[in-house]
Structure formats: C-alpha cells, structure tokens
Figure (tube, rainbow, N blue to C red):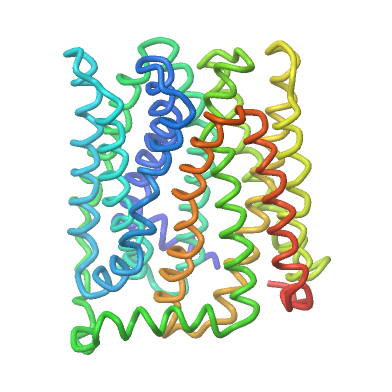
Length: 412
C-alpha cells in the first residue's frame, strides 16, 4: 500500500488528471445551483420551467447512454475527454454573454443544459475507463479514492461558492466560473504525456446491439442486480420529482436568500464524507444486503423533514441543513455499498457494459421525474410535490427488502 501511494504522488500524469477533475467538479457544483437560480431570479421561471430545465440536463443519459458506452469503448479516451470539456466550456460561457447583451431566454438554458448533458455522458463514460491507462492495476483503488475525495470536497465547497457568487454577481456570471473550470480541466488533460493504448481490435467487429443486449441481460437476468436497479431507479425518479422544484421551494415559499440556499445545499458534502467512512463498517457489521436496504428506508426521515419544513428562515434553515446532511450520508452509504456489490457479482469482462446499462436504467428515470415534478408543481403546489419524494423512499425500500438483496450478508 505504501508503494502505491508513493507512486501516485510521483505520477505526474495522474496528478494532472486529479487536479483538472477537482477544479472541474467544483465548477460543476457551482453551475448545479447557479443555473436554476438564474432561471428563477433572472427569468422568473415557474415549477414547470424548472422541471424542464432539470430534465434537459439528464435526458441525454436516457437517450444516448447505452450507445455512448459502446462508442467510447471503441476509441481512445483522452481526445474525447478534452473535446467534451472544451465544448462544455463554450456552451456555458454563452450564458453570461447572452445575459450581458440582454438576450438570455429560458429556451437557451434548456438547450445549453441538454447539450452539456450530451457531452457529460461521453465524458463520464470515457473518464471511468481512462484511469487504468494512467496507473497500475494495483493503484486503481488509491486513484479512485483520491478522486472521490475531490468529489466530496466539491460537494462541500461548490454550493456555498455558488450561493455567494449568485448573491454578489448574479447567476449568469457565476456560471462563467464553471466554464473556466472546464478549460482548466481540458488543459490538464492536454498536458498528460502517458501513451494511451488503442482500443481492442476485436471489439470493432462486434455489433453494437450485441454489446447492448449482453449488458441488459446481465442486469435483468440476476435477481439481486435487478432489485438494486429497481430501487435506484425509483429513488432517482421520485427524488427528482422533488429535486426539480427544491430551489424554487427554498427561494419562493420559504424565503431563503441565494447565499443561504448555497449553504443548505452545501450540507450534502459533509454528509457524503461521513457516509463514505461509514459504508464499509456498516456492511461488515450488518451485512451488505441490510445496509443497502437501510439507505432508502432511513431516507424517509430527511425527505419528510424537507416536505414538512415551515416557518421563517432562521427556523427552517437548521432543519433543511440537517435533512440534506442525512440525505448525503445515507445516499453515499447506499451507493458505495450497492456499487461494490455490483462489482463483486459481475465479471471483469462485463463490468463496463453492466455499469453503462445500470447508468441508463437508473439515470434514465431522472428526466421523467423532473418533468413530472415540474408539471405537478404547477397543479398541486410545491410542498405536495416534495411529499411525493417520501413515497418514493418507501417504494424503493420495498424493491430491495422484498428481494434476495436482504440476504446478501458478506462484508465488502
């Protein structure tokens, strides 16, 4: 282990990848809050518009996710990563430019969110497969751990930074920070000197549908993986019914200022860090299966806290911060445990297609939930929409507790 850590510290190419991704992740967290705040504060977006905006960003995972996985596997990954970052930077930079000229419209936000989502699909698929080209196989755990630390730091720093920036300079200009972060990431990737091996020649002769069907069969044919997919897809579907109107709920119904909205969202990061530390211990103590079941079951509590929050900002802020902290912690425990279980159950030959298929299934419900949340927010109000998220946690819990997942007892 000491050798692996020492090697990574001296692996300049990995350090470039790590530095670029850290900056990019913080920038992305800024946009995740600044974009909807721009829609609410500058363009006066309502619930349905907010649902459309969220759906536009995640629709590419449903529309092209499976095909992107097969396509990326047949090409070198670094050029894809660089092109995706440069493209995302250009698209996001157009938002503050249009705002400065007085030309910004909600339709532009939809378009930017969708195309950035397309590029993110390709980036995410390529990024996962690129790390093995930079580090030895025995260093992959260390490399992934460092990257996950960056993700947690971004979850902590990004929303707070976004809220402060929106308060000071407005949402459109805050998005410019994310555009700059993608350029920094692209430059770091450009400076990597490691030679990336070409894609396997034999994969070029396989039909795309052959790869797609084999990946789908891996999930559908295994009762444990099928239950995990159903649980995660349900959590995302109902979670984004609520998430699509959450920022609007904070600003319009609860009267929370943009800077404090960032403070609330920032609570997810510390919760995720705690969850990452607890996941393996919980799996060893209670078993993998029951730890997976506990995630959605206990998430009923913070979902209910959010839906029932009422009063002036000094009263609701501690409730919301605690609720998001718990959501971040429980969500991370669930994700770490179920991803580790999937990796253990599936052979190396099928890992890529299994993960691409799982991403398609569980992320494909996000745009559906976002559209439904926006439409429901227009008709029944924001608080009832948030209550629907509680129902989702109950249904997701049933998906795993009534399946063979609960009997998986070994530690990870």
